[in-house]
Image (cartoon, helix red, strand yellow):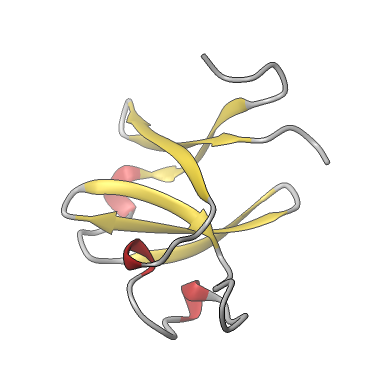
Length: 88
């Protein structure tokens, strides 16, 4: 069960993120990168903690191989949803 200040938020249609593709989005005050890894949707902070670049710009390696802050994700009714923290 999510913490009281967290909510699931729709960020895009699941069909818009193809397998192997990544894309950057903004959710509240957070920049997030979404990755479709073999049909599994993953969400990470859109910043490499080691080198500081935005992962959504296609630099560096696959964010799925990096130890980054991870957001909860799910696909419901064809929409990608992220378990987003409440306002900071």
